[in-house]
Length: 192
Image (cartoon, rainbow, N blue to C red; front, side):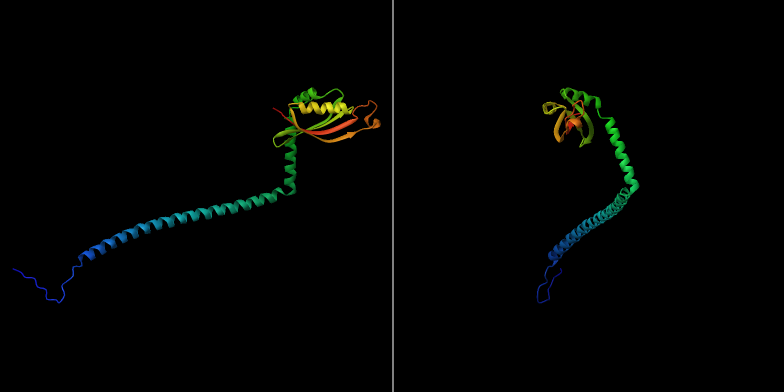
């Protein structure tokens, strides 16, 4: 038989629960540290990729801005301005050719009272709408007023503005006594 004797003055403490708890807490701390380190590394790598993308995009923006500045300088040169003016002129010619002249004249014929005639007509495209600048001649005020009333009632012409009115004396009007009153006006023409 064995006998266990404690010869020390104080009894020996059992430190196993403390060491087990400390080991468990340490292990959990190492696991948490590994998880946080991995998440931190992933975040750093994603941030690095984002910063690389931002740097690349900023480089593209700088290159595009320089290219835009070069093009702006080129388009302000005399040869480029001449080409742009010619292109605008050709586009206006194409626009005039596609303007429905016969339809406009048919609609004007319905609105023109006797004694009023169209002296000049000029169409242009403004904000996607056909704007017509008309110069009409009338023998007297009554015919002019009848024409203005008729064009205002027309469904094809809208937004009518008289821009100027001139009166001719007998010598300017000629021997036929036509067009004593000349009126310039703008109107929006409904092409559809």
